[in-house]
Image (cartoon, rainbow, N blue to C red; front, side, top):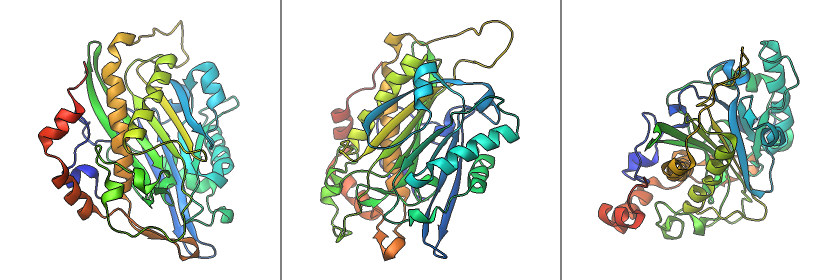
Length: 364
């Protein structure tokens, strides 16, 4: 798997975590199930799960959370209760448009079978449309696939590109999918990790940018599409180990818009651009007495806002760089980004000094 930094392209100023992934946030786990077959119907799809805390703690020990809808032509279940309660009490799952119900039901059943919840569940399941490469009406995803992703959720490096919920996705008219990145931030309140994971299925080629360079307009291959792919929507999940309160999570989720825009996202009318942020820095598990809550003062948040934007931007770029050319339903092909051409363009476009000057110093 090739990532952006393997091409000697660096985004932003903050350092990454050890894996440059959302799993650099302590306790966060990611699992994928990828479904690719041609018979009896063409499948290019899957599911990706994000566990906010290790194992059953994702259910037993909620995390403060909030969301932001930049453009709402899409679906992510469970957001009304997150808005009401300020808490995330389940794993997050990302899949295709037609299979939100399947994944939702599987998440509820999985938790009940293992005794993780004794009350009604309102899981978070987000979707983007993979119907250009995937015969979505085949409903390929089953509960067993969701269970596999949950059981396989792990820390460490995260597979990107044509995996899990991103298997059939297209981004800026190149093959897209899953991407992730992280940043380590030193604030006046302490040092924290910000991680992002995206399911990227959005954008026009002419808008695609890498560190501000209009790469989508400069890359000569592959040639423009004969048939429009109709890709749309992006799901962005931001995680942090900082002790943020729900309204601060909402502020963090809004900053995903900055990273989205830097990579060329616009928020088209038919795009579901839905962003969710959660913070694990407080312990909310049931117990004796009242929980002792902490928070980062608002005037210490600026570095976290910048880091969130950087991590989202790089996550989108990793999704595109990692993805490989894929042929799917009706013989359609989504071409991978030509990495050699990207590296050539970036090497010749600006010097490192010019890039640093353009981006400016790290915010304190």
